Each structure stands twice: as structure tokens, then as C-alpha cells.
Image (cartoon, rainbow, N blue to C red):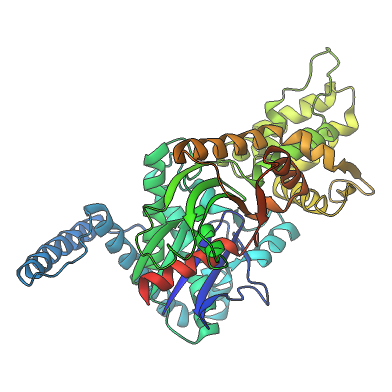
Length: 486
């Protein structure tokens, strides 16, 4: 069996092909979305080091075996896919990781109840993981949006660490999907952004794809393919078209925003090779999380001392407030929760004119409440979808503490991000050399009226269609899996 997996920065979803269309499967209760989060009551995730000598031996054997198979295929005039050295290494790494996991499972079956309490069996995912972390931020180990770190400049240890995290999440999703379908899912198409988070460009993209491929193989998939997320969204939209059109797809997700200009319609829908119909694509590491951070920075952090003055007339240094909400920046977050930062905040509290604000910052630091504050900012953004203004409660900081926020506040906070969206769309138009007949918008960020109104004002004469903000990509990936693997 085959499936399409949207392993997103904010949420994950998986679909299978049923009754001649993609169907998304429930992953958490009845919800077809699983927040990209993991929590364990342990203080860290243990990563067993791979035996490098054994890995090299296996890769060498795989190369020899492939060489023999290629020669045999050539003699018979048959075509065969030839894997690169890095792909072979990913496959063997994945197999070794799966073997380690199977050994752990066998050992776990022999554990006592006391041992099981401290085992990795305590790992939970999705909304349950978020709630466990909110319940006690000082306990356990919590990670949100691991996809955000895959393209970064990280050590070999962290490469294995994130591969381990993502393997566990993909394996959990696979297990849930197989329990629903009562079938073994062996082949998968996974979505990828045009550019992953990080500053390493194509090196970062290659690294991220390698980690995800290795994780998918370790989770038990035999065949793994990748497809750009804006192309997947386009393929989902194409199923409802009766005429050929040129479509500009804006996929505004949680961690990245991607654009593509694609020829879609009945003339193209059955093609396996869509390279001729893709006229251009672009992407940037800006998404809904950046909206949350900017809204928190501009409209929430002033209540925690941002722009406040000390007795000497100088403001409290602004980097402190950026670190306080930079939950997806590992280094910045580590700096904020450090004892050194705690001492700085105590010093600023002594010298602050508006002490009640800096006291809130101290509580944010001591309670390790950065993630919860980010979540509050995200909830504010979501609530502003249906309301012009809200009162945001922050009772976990102090009782009866609310902050008024308006839709206009959000617009002011994210103007730079909207400018990035526009530059991506114009870049795609320039690559394509044509204007779109239709603009198709998907991704969770697309739901915001601020984004919709901004987009409509920029493209007054072009029809704008907003798709299913959470299902379009996974449905398109499932559609592509059907064409590849059926």
C-alpha cells in the first residue's frame, strides 16, 4: 500500500487513495492533523550511536550488489534505478536504526513495570505532547517543530538526534495509518519545502532531505519519494479543473512559504513527468511561526519590559526579548533559559522604572514559559481570523492579566513577512514569463483575513481561490503517490 505524508512544521497529516480520491486518515482522536510535537517524561532523548565500521561495511556491500544488478539489467536491456552513494548510506543507516528500534522493543517486552515508567514508551506526540509540556514546563523533554532544524548547520550528533526524533514521529504516524487501513504501508511520498529552514542553501536542503529519507526508511518504509509542497498543492487543485489554466500557487505554511507557477488541467493531469508544466518556483523560510513571533515581539513583549527604561535612562537591551520568544531557535532559547540570563533579568528588575513589567519577564524565564507564550501568540492570531479584536488572557503569568490585540496590530506586526510573500510571487512570475489565470492559496497562514485582504488588494483582477489550508498538500502528495505506485 502507498500513502502521502505531509510532515509539516506545524502539523502532520497522511492520506491514502480510496474511491478514486485521496482520503486523509485520523491521527489523534478524530483529528486528521497531528501537531508536530514530541514529549517524554525523560529529560532527554537517548540516541544510540551507530557502529561506523559496520555502516561502512554495509554501504560497501550495497554498492557491490547494486553494481551487479545494474550490469545484469543492462544485459537484459532493462532499466533500473541506480542509487547515489549518499542515498545508499541513508538506506543502510535507516535499516540499522530500525534494527536498533526492534532490539529496544524486544528488550522493553522484558521490562518490569518500574523500568517501563522510565522507558521511551512514555513518549507522546501531538496535542497530548503539548498539553503535557504546558502542565509542567520544568519537567521532561519537549520538542516542537523538529522540521525547522533540519537544514541548519548542526553537528553529526545532532544530525542523528533529529533523525531519531523524526523517525519516532514518522513511525508513530505510520502505525496510526496502518491501524486505520489494516494494511502495511510500504511506499510513501513526503512533502518538502522549496527551501528548508537554515542558512546553508542547497547544502541545508540536501541535509534535510537526507535526514527525512533516513528517518522514513528507519520507520519501515521501503520506497520513499519527495515532492515540493507547492507542486503537491497544485496537483490537489488540478483534480477539480475542467479547463487548462496557469496557476500561481501560494503555499503559506507554518515554517516556510513556497510559490510555484504551474500549468494545470485535463491536458496535464495524467502525466507522470510534470517538469514541462512547472514554469517556476521559489520559497523562503518565512511562515506562520514568524507571524506568531512578530506579533509577540511587537504587541505582547512591551508588557514584559520591551522598550522600558532603566533608572539610568537606557532601555533594557532588546535581544533579551527576542530570545524570550525565539522558541524554534535552539541557541537563542538556550541563552534565554540560562542562569546567566536569569542574573541579568534580576539586575534589570532592580534598576527598572516599570518593575511590574520586568517582573513578568522574570516569571517567564523562571517558569520556562517561552513555548506557552508563543502558543498564546499563535492563538491570538487564530482568534483574529473571526474577530476584529480580542483580549488575550495570560493568567499563567499573573491572574487577571489580559492584553488587547486587534487585527490591525497583526497587520502592522507582519508587514515585512507580507513583503516577502510578494517578492516570492513576483519572482515566480518573472521565471515563468507569464501572468497567472488563477491564484491558489493554501497553508494554515492563508486562513488569516489579513493575508487574504492583502493578497486581493495586490491582485485585483485575478481570481483568488483559497483551498483547504491544512489538507491540500497532503491530498496532493497522496495523488502523486497514486500515480507513482499504483
